[in-house]
Length: 215
Image (tube, rainbow, N blue to C red):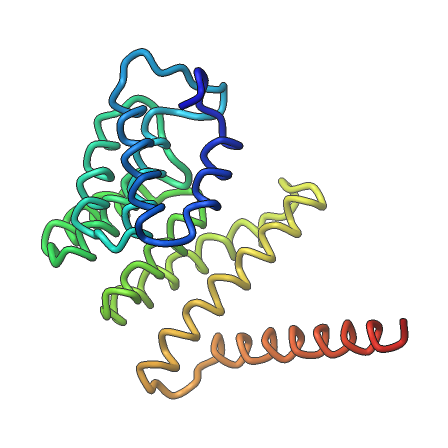
């Protein structure tokens, strides 16, 4: 256990935990450090983020209840975890069959109108994984609406910020399309846009393959 917890330590430890047994050991190590008041943190790491890292490792260890419990502890820990530590608790609640509490917390978060589009993407994916296509599509729709408004107000963005917003919008549209396609819905305008995006990705991959063949 390092004296100071850094993202490099978290990422490297998580990467090396390539089977459930190793993931469990890493999760327990993260959890112990997060609970230890003597643990020091790098400037951009928080105790809450370390609890969330433990939660993610418990999922890798195939222990969703332990993952939920770690995400629950993160809520009272100092700091936050991107995009919002509450989304990890909602995920944990959904994965452990506590849909009513998950929906109440999601409702409260939605009322705040989060400005980070990754909140919407994360919860869209979480509800999709839980088999709730209605709420998954709802979160993707809200994220698309929010980020589209940001793009339409592009005078406030520099070139890199606009590119990031466009890329995030594509991510949300593709997530929405995957949910709707799996549910058997007839394609709408956003689904058609998703298909165009996928076609562009396929063309880019083919161009890259052609370039590799020429080398």
